[in-house]
Length: 238
Image 1 (cartoon, rainbow, N blue to C red):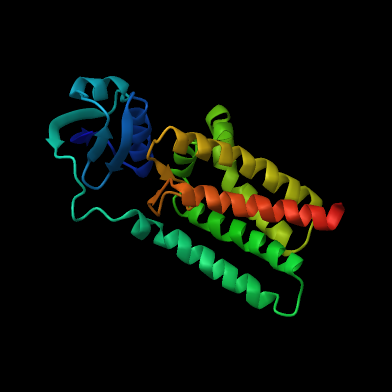
Image 2 (cartoon, rainbow, N blue to C red):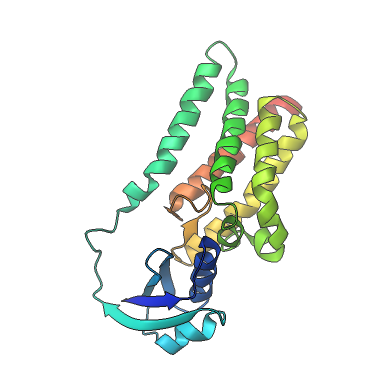
């Protein structure tokens, strides 16, 4: 494996950061790309040698790649471990679980699941809105529907907010449950495909404000939501 540090000029916003990242990932044998707007650099892990011209060929015209460097194949001390990078996701899910449980101490497990799904969508949509302009590009890197219909990526945080309110207020639960199963199944398919191809990209489940790697944890998170929705559907309508 080869590790490169490339200077990228022309980036002016977080959307540019996502565009450069997605462009470089279009190259074959790319394992991981981390683009930093602050330092105007791209750290690239690849299975084989790539040239500065290879990178420039896939970048839009407004961006220029230069100052080509090759680094040794090892993790630097400053690079956080996967567990540390997954800490925000674990903490958020922990608080959602505790809150859902406290709200339903004297209620049924069915209500606990509905509140969990409602809080899940509300909290996760909040983080997507923190860097709303960059979310669609990041989401489209692995969600099949967002790749085909870019507007869906812009709409998705609003869909999550609406679904969250529907679950919390027990409004049109049949529609909310079916939408949850359908939309998360599509995203889960994209996650499985990404993990299968061993591409290391950022997960957009918490937006782009928090740098979260795409790992098996993302798959488990979606799986829990789909399972809860299926169980709720069976209990309520079958």
